Length: 89
Image 1 (tube, rainbow, N blue to C red):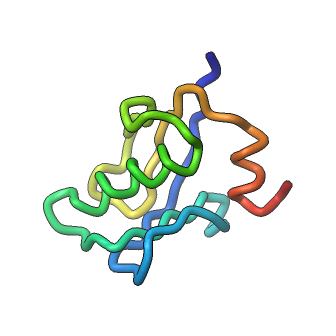
Image 2: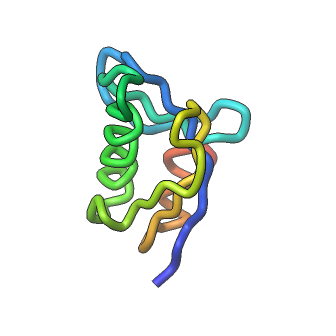
């Protein structure tokens, strides 16, 4: 099983949850939740799991718990899917 390590940029308070695009070489993750008590981080991890089609437990926060820029590991992540999400496929 492959593990992808990627940098994400979380945009809390979005009108809808979406994963895709780039911001300073990071995958953009838009979430409805506000950045209060870790709600946006939890929502971002759920959104990344859905985007890659893996269980929520397969996505782990490596660093950036209180930052908009986070590093996550995705167990079973597909590099082709990552390229699609980044818009480079």
